[in-house]
Length: 238
Image 1 (cartoon, rainbow, N blue to C red):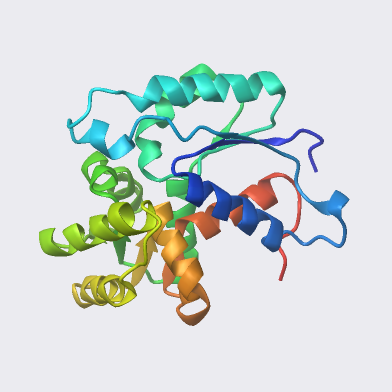
Image 2: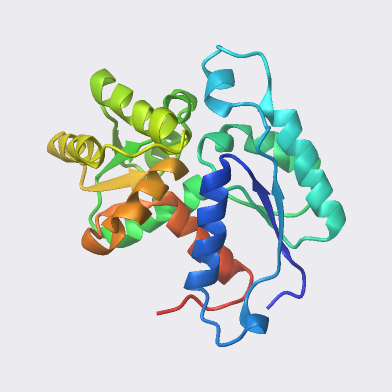
């Protein structure tokens, strides 16, 4: 177990960071305060929008901002870094170039979890922001393992973006039926397991209790919380 805290580049988005911290606390096998992880959280909500930059609708580059945040956290003395945002994975190399401590990849850990859930896995469904899909961060991880990747069609991707930006990020009620219909159609297209590759979708899953109902939904935020606990030398609660 490390004596150094874990660094969290947060605020991307703010509610997802809050859910991540709650997951880490709830999932840690702890009997007292002192059994929990030490965390240094930089909840930098004003980091430029990742999807807008990737799609070319904004010139505000989040990469240098995230790299600077990583350096600030390293200077504080963290053992490793986590970023509870999938789209931000597009900028991981800039973060790595700014620090010497490891950065745990939410994308790689989530795909690994999908492989663990389905031993004969051949095809992974990915639900994510349009920016994440355009950056192909999940495609690359899935294809690196020799697996196929299924994503929503344009109409369903528009549904997901409304859920992410107009509902979750805006603090408004979520159209759960519309979201579940997208999940069903991705499965109909051949996905054996469906990855929730956006932390706003993780919020939807957590609020609706979807992960307890469906083991073939693999949530990126839940996975990152579990791997963060283990990487810090603690036990995940059974």
